Image (cartoon, rainbow, N blue to C red; front, top):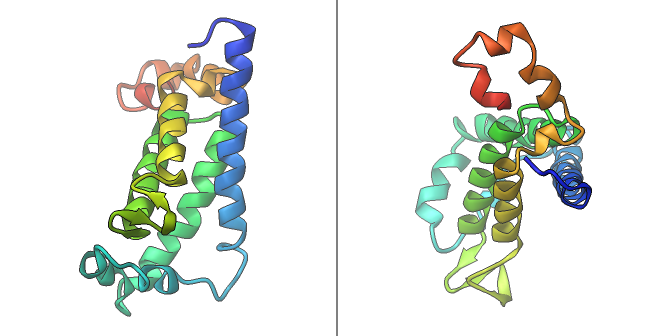
Length: 161
């Protein structure tokens, strides 16, 4: 966990930036009834066959729900600093999937991004937040860790530790 006030400020800054990123994405998905992942996923190029599974009539509503509320829950978790370790892990997974989905090898999304784009940068920031126990820096993880129910549970303890 960060000890200096400068390091705590940096961790909090990155936690809030990533929270905003996920909450802003969720605001365009959860609150817009016409949102569907089909439009995004159908434009994949390098791994199109792997992503096409998620555009089938059976899977599209499930995938859409998971993306919408995944963004919302990750953003809220980062904002309040509760279960940051698990939300950061899911955020990294999501960013890697988006990186693959935007890939037109060796370019990512457009010819300005050669192999690396912002999805990998976001994944790196989320990894940093998990390693630095960002939920303990003015977040609810520090409070939740002291609860008896969390201290006595081998399942809950790693979520906030």
